[in-house]
Structures are given as structure tokens and as C-alpha cells.
Length: 88
Image 1 (cartoon, helix red, strand yellow):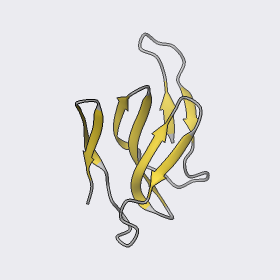
Image 2 (cartoon, rainbow, N blue to C red; image 1 turned 60 degrees about the vertical axis):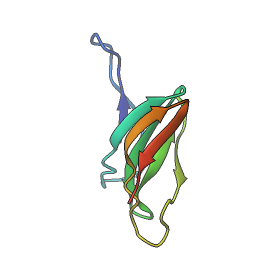
Image 3 (tube, rainbow, N blue to C red; image 1 turned 30 degrees about the vertical axis):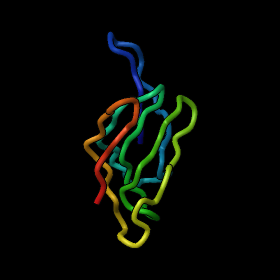
Image 4 (cartoon, rainbow, N blue to C red; image 1 turned 180 degrees about the vertical axis):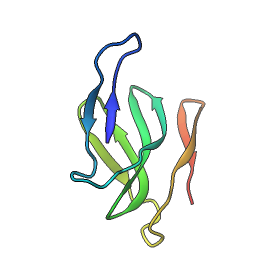
């Protein structure tokens, strides 16, 4: 589940459930860059992969290592206008 809220006590709301149902997606390593939010989400089909939220839609961007089951993107950082991260 990915939630959003504003600092200062505004209501918190559900953005999107990346895995509908009782299973948890465990979003992690969340970073805002270039007007979008990037994060690692674990889903049943692809493992921990890179996802993006553009303010309306949460989408998996890529299965970085298709054969491994998890690429676990993390440690996001911006350098010279480009977003970088590490993956397994």
C-alpha cells in the first residue's frame, strides 16, 4: 500500500494498493525526483522492483533482473540531473 498525506495534520489517503488483497507490497527506499516519486515495491510476480508514482498512477517501470526474482533498487540519488540507484 502506498499512502500520502500533508505535513500539518491533513488527512492521509491511500494512493494505490500495488497488490490488491491481503498481501503487503512493502514500499521502501522512496525518493521524490523530477516531479515524480520512485520506490522499491515487492510484488508477487516480479519481486522487489522499481516503481513510479506520477500523482495519479503507480506503475512498475521495469523488471531490472528478470531471472533473479528481485533487483531491490535502493540508495537513490541525483547527480547532474539524472536519478541513479543501485540494484542487485
